[in-house]
Length: 463
Image (cartoon, rainbow, N blue to C red; front, side, top):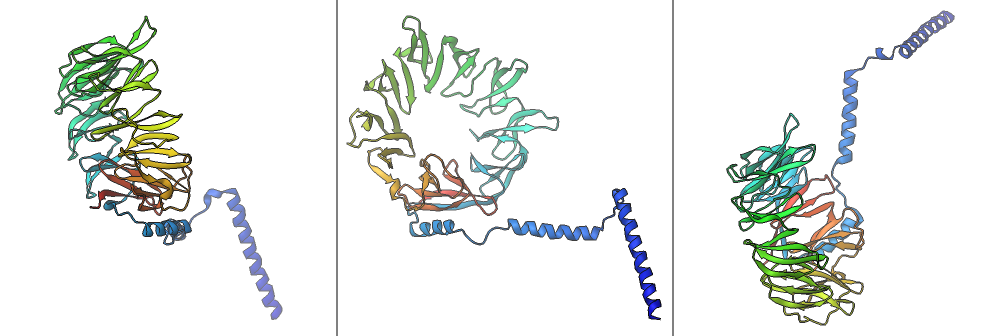
C-alpha cells in the first residue's frame, strides 16, 4: 500500500514538471502571450509611488551647517529690517512686474498673480514684460505656432491684440512695435502705437527705436543715427552724427569722426541740433546728473551745460550720484581715493580696489579687507565684522539688504546656503535657502531646499 501511494505521488509530480516545462518553452517562443494581473500591477505601483513620495518628503531634520546658520541668526538678528510674508509655496520662480503683480513661470508659460496669490492671468503667455504706464507687453504662441506680441492691463484684459512680431514697453504714452518685413534678410519695420493701439507713427525701416523720453526718441537705420519727435518728424537727420544717446529731456550726447584729427570727437546737442557743448572731447559719458569727459587722456566732470565741475587732471574717474550730492573715486598713489563734487579729497583713506555704488554704498578693499563705504567716505560695514563663521561671498546691497552665500570664495560662489544681511551686518535671513532673488519695489523671493517652492517677502525698515 505504501509503495502504491509513493508511485501515485511520483506520477503526479512528473505531470507537474512536464506542464511547467511546456509553459516555459511557450513563453520563450511567444513572449507576447504573457498576461498581466491588473490587481498585482496596481499594488506594485502603489508601493513604488509610496517609496518615491517618501524620498521627496520635506526633511524634518537640519544639517549641521543649517543648525549653525540658524544659531548665528538667532544671536545676531537684524534690528533694521523686517520681512513680511506676501506669497508662499509658489511652484515656480517669481518675477515682479510692478503694480503689485508678479509672474510665475510654470512648465511652459507664465501665470500672473497678485499679492494675495490670486490668479490675474492664467498661464497662457510665454513671455511677459514689466508693466509700464499701466500696460505690459505679452508674447503669445498660438496653436498655429505663430509668435506675436500684444499688451494687457493690470486686470489681465487684452488691451492691444497680439499681432506684432516685437514690442517694447510704453514710455511717454507710446510703445515701439515691430514687424518682420523680410525674414530672409532680417529686415524689420518699426512703428509707434498709443495705448488704444492706434498707430501714431507709421512703420518705417528702423533697426532700433526703443523708447521716447521727453518727447524724443533716438532711431537707428542702416547704421545711421537720428532723432524723431512724437509726431514722427525727424528733428536730427539720419547720418548727421555717427552716434547719439539721450541724456535728458531734449539733450543728446553726439559723436562724429574728425578726419583731420583721425579720431572720434564728442559734444552735446539739443533737439534743435544746437551745439550745447563743443565737439572737442575724446569721449563723454552720462553718469547721473553729471557728465564725465575724457580730454587728451585725462578725465574730468562737468554738468549738462558744459560747466566744468572737476578739471581734466585725473587718469581715471569712477563717479557716483547719490541723492543730491555726488562723489567719485580717482587714482592716487597708484590706488584709489574719494573726491567730492569740488574735486577735494574727502578723507585720507586709500583703497586698493573700488566698485560701483549700489543702494548708497560703494564696495572697496584695503589690503585683503573688504568694506562698504557711504557718500561721506565713512566705512559703514566691514565684511570681517559680519557674524557668519564659515567662508562666504556677499553681493552688493539693494533695498537695504545684501545676499550672503556660505561656503564660497569671493570669486567662485558655491550653490545654495543663501541668506540676507542688513547694512549693519546683522542677519535678516539665515543661510539655509537654495536661492534668493531681490525683486523690484522692495520685494525678495526665496527658494526652499525642501521642495523647491518659492516664497515672496516685502522688505520693511524697522523704525
